[in-house]
Length: 154
Image (cartoon, rainbow, N blue to C red; front, side):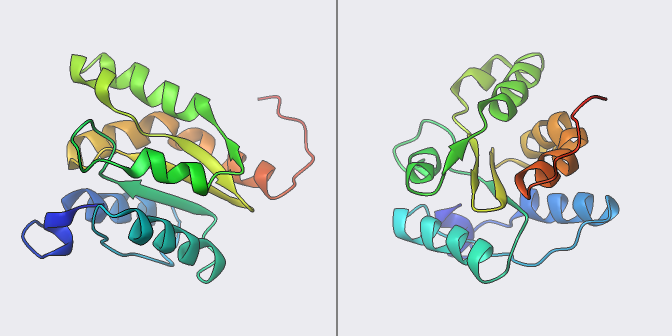
């Protein structure tokens, strides 16, 4: 989510870094789009990634701060069927160990249908730091969202 990225004025380094990370982790990219910080664009793109591209995991970057144009978290109100607050809590907790600015990150995580949606900060460094906190739990979370009835014991 970036007005400047959408207009071609800024390179999407966080998105590209995450694509590389997930490819290394054996995941397949099925949808990628840079959208402006506009409610309809954000909501439509996430719905399309789930309903048309059948994404199991939707990662957004940007729009999670406190600037007037940062509206990604508010858009999630129209998308989430269930919130998964522990994901965002864990990311902010670990990020706070690196920078006190983590307290103003407003990213959220939740479920729509059988897909997990996670909002990450827009900077490459912050996006990678945050996703690494929850990466070990993502496969299990997606399995459970899809209805896996196995016990959760580790």
